[in-house]
Length: 203
Image 1 (cartoon, rainbow, N blue to C red):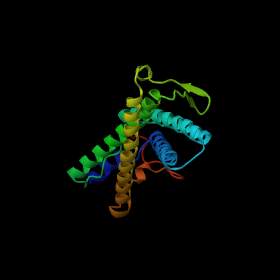
Image 2 (image 1 turned 120 degrees about the vertical axis):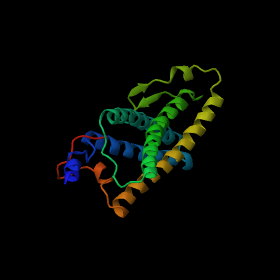
Image 3 (image 1 turned 90 degrees about the horizontal axis):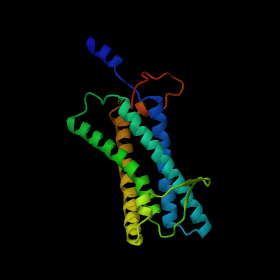
């Protein structure tokens, strides 16, 4: 008879802050991926390409800040527990996938920032057309930027595909928990529209 009481005292949902950050970051990353594909595969006039690149950089910096805030929030707010019936290897896979997602989400905007900093074009980054964003000092002062720029472009390109694969794995796992295992994993991160959260503590 003690198990239900213990469960009721446990953390059953992510905080509102965590949920908002999660979905803002998810939307930002989705927009960035679509924009990256458009810039890579569609023929656009130079002015449109320039505008897309500036917007891509602006959203990327915004997402980087949001991810930093989310990591800080995660480190200071305990997330809900995983289902008790999850096997050990499933728990390990979940933790590793989340760690990889956090790391790659931060790495992608940083690599993009580094790539812009060594760009041989020397076009400044204006966040949303107004705020001048500085280049990384060490990279911007390199004498021979071209090979570094080529390497960083490749890293950023393939990192984007790897992140997309991880997101696909993450979404598939969430859908499996919701529709196949019928547990509470996915509902923990859904906005509590029209009802009170069971807990105000979490990720």
